[in-house]
Image 1: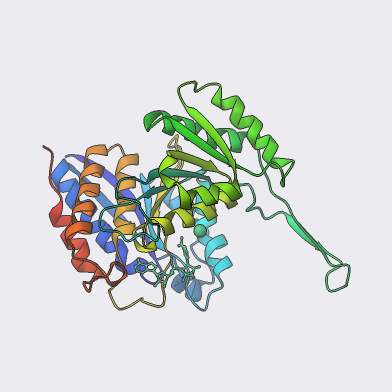
Image 2: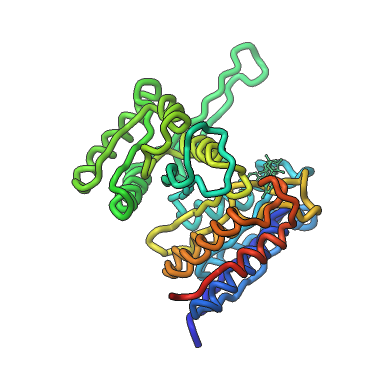
Length: 355
Ligand code: NAI
Ligand code: MG
């Protein structure tokens, strides 16, 4: 018996149900080539589930998957169910209960991708956004005073904890050490003048423990401009929840279609399962036509392999993705006419085993 990984599999809604099977196809093939296997526990948690049961997942849902090796998710959200229900009823509870405090988003210009930027070659953009994933600006703390009157007053708090800020920065610095040794953090200490100077002070303190890492900091506004004007300068970019959310979509937009962008929600110490999902949503506008690009899901699967310690297999999946991006087949969002399944099969077939 080789290694077997138990994966909580949540296809979710819309094209999540079309791209997750392609991710499974490719990862099963990777396992066959590299000597491990998967047990894919399929969970129906979704908006469809909500319309029957009145909740996105059972009350004991998180307990049922807490000992799995990882979570492989497609997308959740569908017309008819308000987006805050799918988010606060499934995605956020998973991210928070399982302390997936790192949201990792690779930003890489792959061959065969169209970029809206001028004068950039494949390979010239290759960095990672490390976004805080459990606190910060996305808090449920706030209130409305004097509602409905002319004095109506709305307050929403941001929450930054020392533990939350430090552990994120620590992860970013360790990652920079393993990559090109450069870390940049986003701030806005001139405008958000309590929380962001705190963030900066913690970053400087932690930087002292990583003398080999070259650091820089930018206000979020000029940082966004640099993403467009000079994206080649970045290696690891660390940002708060809201800032990282915006930078992630901007970075993905600079390097091609949303259909290929992957993400990981990591609990780095491994006390809880981490979750791997494409950046895109359930795309109701194209659901049912089998034209969704499966690459974002498959690339997220490669990140899962990495986290499971199967680095060689992860590289083989990435090489196969690159090969198919260059040679096709392609889905319509990449200018082709092939189906979700044709692209998934081509990537599975392009994969090579151990050298
Ligand atoms: P979306 O990402 O689903 O779609 C945006 C546009 O990109 C659409 O035109 C869609 O056709 C296209 N697109 C997305 N993925 C694609 C793929 N793999 N291949 C080809 N084209 C693709 O975002 P939208 O429309 O804002 O949201 C739809 C639903 O998804 C909402 O209910 C939203 O809440 C949910 N959502 C869920 C996320 C998650 O599960 N993490 C993330 C983003 C949105
Ligand atoms: Mg986003």
